[in-house]
Amino acid sequence: MLQVPAPFPHSGSFAYMDGVDAQGNDVVEKVRILAHKAPDLVLVAIKSHRFPREIASGNRTVNLHQLRETEQAAPVSTPKPSGRTKGRRR
Image (cartoon, one colour):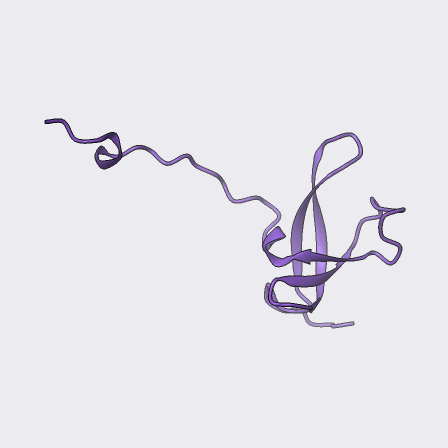
């Protein structure tokens, strides 16, 4: 195992992945990127024990776009309409 943390999204770095628990609550899973498999796929090690019957080893292959560097999700702001999107008056 790597002793020195690597920068995201390289192998050995930590990332966060969104998920839903059995009660339907949104949860954030801390994972460690183990390897890059294809241009879009990474093998991650899941730290929690929420998936006892789904993944035996604690490893899972996920898309890279499902991971993020920080635990907090990026705020989603709705774009404000500008004068050009409203249309011009004549």
